[in-house]
Length: 98
Image (cartoon, rainbow, N blue to C red; front, side, top):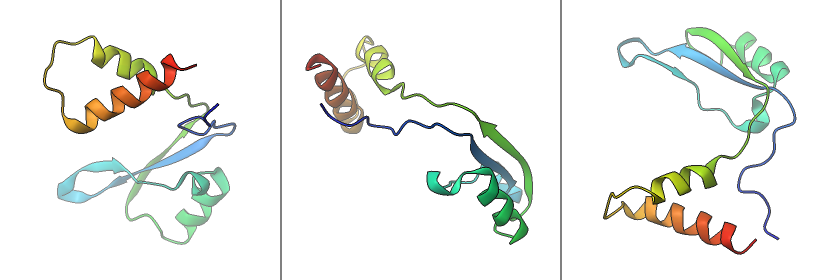
């Protein structure tokens, strides 16, 4: 049996929304191992985020890749982009072998 494609999250994950001026606002890309409350607080204190606006905590996460792949596979869009086709093939082949 293959390991899950996305690790299970058993703790809150914190995302920092920052203001990037003319580029707009965005949640800062964060290594999952650095997305806990204490690390985000340390990073805010250290000035790691320019113009932070808010912090969002997500208490659970689940991998919805297979359901997304099934939904895309039902569409009549053809041809699919190569990366999307690979995504669907990998996930639907993986689920069929379970």
